[in-house]
Length: 217
Image (cartoon, rainbow, N blue to C red; front, side, top):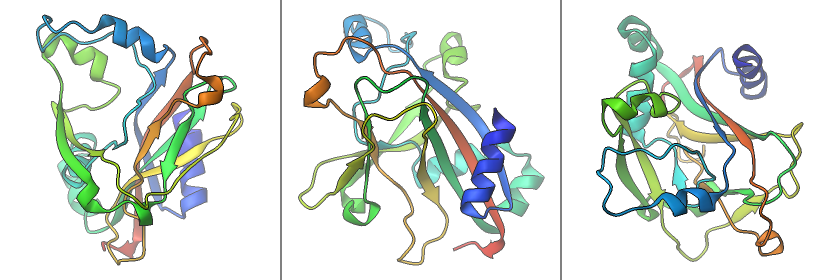
């Protein structure tokens, strides 16, 4: 699966190198994690299910992207790869036809930096580490949460099938004022499928992508 994803990314983006550093499958309904919520639980207690992420976010902030690269490459590799353009791109695809909680992506041009808040996702204790191996090899990572602002534009693919996929850019070192550097995205409740009980099942592969023939920014 990983070699196929890396080949697709290189072909689609023109990258010289791609490295899948993690994957996550989401197979439980959103309500299942809501039912587990207990304010008396210790912070180190982790949920055991992965559900659609119903909040506007970008998987890595700029600092988080650097953390991911350094967690997944040797110091020598990182030193070399940080000299040229690089990015983090997710491949998102449904495992079955999407019955509910479709994924929406924003037009990056309509989503301004002032509407993104950087937070730090920390692995909640050693015991829970195994539950977060799919997200990071380190102790945590910076990410971005989004807030609403007039003028934001959103798009989604309706009735996605397992043979369809979305590429979602989470970070791009290229900062030329024209190239999208990140794409806020979120699962959302479609009023037409609000009462559907069957959970959405999806797979996301998180990938480092390198353009060693292009300048850093």
